[in-house]
Amino acid sequence: MNYQHLFHSGNFADVCKHLSILLLLTHFKQKDNAFCYVETHAGAGLYDLHSETAQRSAEYQQGIAQLWQQANLSPLLQNYCNIVAQFNTEIQLRYYPGSPCLVQTQLRDQDRAILAELAPSAAQELKQYMGADKRFAIHQVDAYQAIKAFLPPPEKRGLILIDPPYETGKDFSQIITSLQYLHKHWRQAVVAVWYPIKKRTEVAEFHQQVRATGLRKILATELCIYPDDNQLRLNGSGLLVVNPPWQFEEQMRGLFAELLPLLSQHPKAKSSVSWVVPE
Ligand SMILES: C[S@@+](CC[C@H](N)C(=O)[O-])C[C@H]1O[C@@H](n2cnc3c(N)ncnc32)[C@H](O)[C@@H]1O
Image (tube, rainbow, N blue to C red; front, side, top):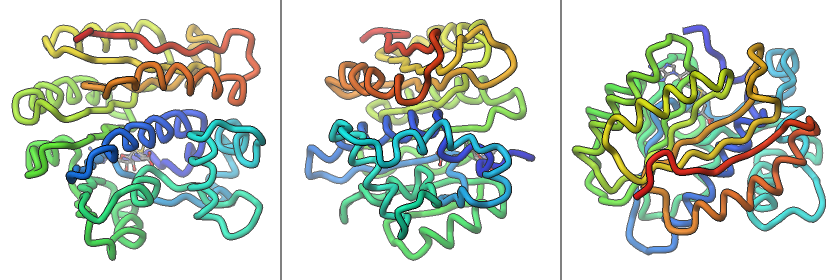
């Protein structure tokens, strides 16, 4: 495992993913009863954008740095920037909260989280940031084993984020197996799967495999800052959402309409929200 999220923290894909998660959590919080948040590839929790590693890639410059202290943002984007600001004591942007830290600001007393992270150093950092919070259970374990070991949780309501680094070539097939497991054992869960958009053919193949599972009600939300035929880099950020809440589709369209011009000036930048499988 060579992947280090510090290279990518706060980039456009993190921004898209984290805003989508915040939006999904607002739906869960509309009801008083408890929910369980599950993250299978949790990362280190908090990232120092001034570190040598983050500075070398400087990916956050085309992500959070474009939104940071931007005026006239919608309430959702402003709330996200305010949360990031909570992790920065100075006006200058330095620390970027990964999804576990962002989610921690959103959970209520009755809610709970289960986090899995395989890399020992990232898991240790995560425990350091979140370990004292009794609502969080942190496990240094393989993501796909964690799904089978810990799910379904006693709470009937829940959100799962599956956010692998896609280093090994096995993640797409392991995700399909996990979706089938979740469909069988925790059907009402909302499942969010992040995927990279590098080659359109690869994404089309993944969507086809998802369709072949027979699962219903699956939305794909995608934001591409470069044309998706550019084979050299991460062109876009995709999030597949199984069982999206009512109105999430329209809310994501509104979010992307605001976000796209902030994150890319490329003439072929685009976003889409479409059903891979309808209800
Ligand atoms: C994209 S990063 C996670 C970022 C985090 N979800 C966030 O948004 O802040 C992917 C993480 O998965 C971890 N990882 C890689 N393979 C794993 C596996 N099989 N099980 C659990 N974690 C794994 C990596 O160490 C890395 O920290």
